[in-house]
Image (cartoon, rainbow, N blue to C red; front, top):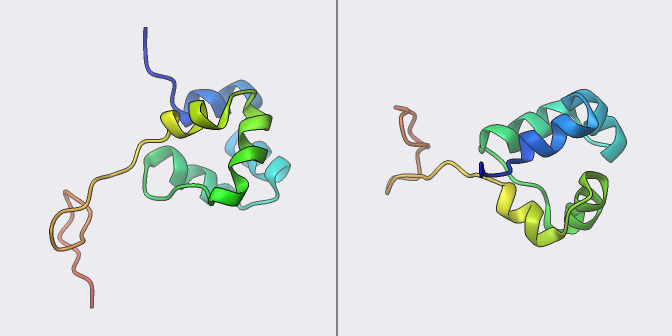
Length: 82
């Protein structure tokens, strides 16, 4: 059985733009959740879980986050923080 991701949950509802509109957020925010560079605000988890028809626990399990290296940079990038 494949892991449920936030993207697969979103695809059952519609496009990133449609989900963003339903949640009152920008579509780039939904995109960032899907690629793991951002996560939803804790206060928004109940609303998002309800929209996707899952529990908050299932929603949290669907989120994938990019790991950061010891310098605080995203793995695979050469960016440094100033």
